[in-house]
Length: 381
Image (cartoon, rainbow, N blue to C red):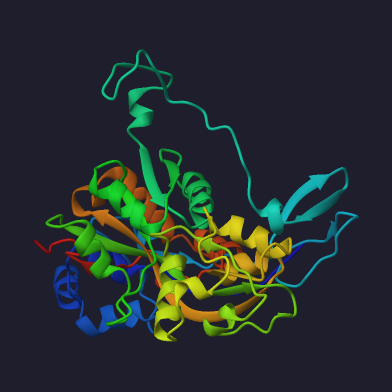
């Protein structure tokens, strides 16, 4: 086993400051330091002394370790791949100590996902829409549950990672496309909605859709990450599919996502931009319910192409034709933002290990993960 040396000092000063609504000057004044010092620390150009770090923590009402941490040393060890597979550089792995050696199982295709029985929290005592239930857990523990709605497979990963980061937190993922997730949020059924929608006219990510879905509701957008969306195709791209018009070629058949899904929204926008009628594309009306389902169809040869993400293409060993880069945000009502469970989730997003997992396994660019990118997202009357 070996490790690297000299781990760099990391910080999330800007995120903590922004969350409290403080400017650099406000924080500098409260901590008794200069604004230039705050700026230098936020950009990583300046490593603070213990005295400065303590004063900043006091000004932000948190611990020094809530602001600063050392990037963890990389640890390596020798492992063998299971006998029906071989290692591929950059491939995510499940690792376990078996006997006297470490054995790795590639996390690709169906092995990258897991279907599990979810422990029940309560039992309904009668029929109806508003009824008495019998609890199977304590109210205190249930109060620490967050429910997220969204279609990204990364939500299951985020649930596991955030619970590992905070023992008091429980995260439940309700599968829903972007539009349906916002509807759940508008109905007060979930704490946050995952959205990856771009306005084709303005190029704006998510904000306009959130305003329209949550009229009058004061909310914020917190970034989970950026990802690439485009065409999943068979290895080698045998049909040479690149543009939307290519999907209307004779003999080409695709599968599609359901109405309201971000990838369906992308496909429709590309076809409209290129002047291709939807009915000219064979399979346009064949709808599948999630990213994994469309990838399975392409991998099995039942479809020549489908719109999804680069991360899904990598997991299923498919080729990928990029069409756009989009930000995946969590839309969160401001009333929920300061609750202890939501704060724990946002804190988890700042953890370097959580970021690395999202980046490696879910294909996210995590440089903005955990940042509040816009406020008042749902304030339009």
